[in-house]
Image (cartoon, rainbow, N blue to C red):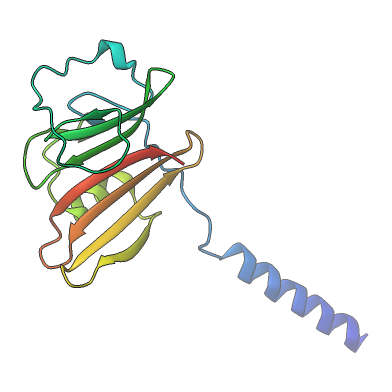
Length: 158
């Protein structure tokens, strides 16, 4: 009888601890991240690149290289987007909301299901990564730890 009570108590405690666990992650939807209205999966043939300045200053095997952004494609669909927000050459939006300047702005719109790591300690840069499991999209936001301002963004298929 005593043994049964102990087993029941242990099971109840385990149930409470499991039920109260905060490890459930929320869904992060990255399908509506846009850079100048370009988003992942956009048809590359429908994008007007005339406002951008062609550039070779970036290394890497990117299909479209401009001072303002880098784009890669897979079967004529956008599969990678890079832009620098600190140079103010593009407009970045989350769910049609613009004027995003700090990592706090991003967190307010996308939530707290992210990984945050040091990107470059000497420059005080940190990287916050969000992962959209349903659409298989990742977004890296690199920001200055000092003032939380976003330096650049990379959006890509995971």
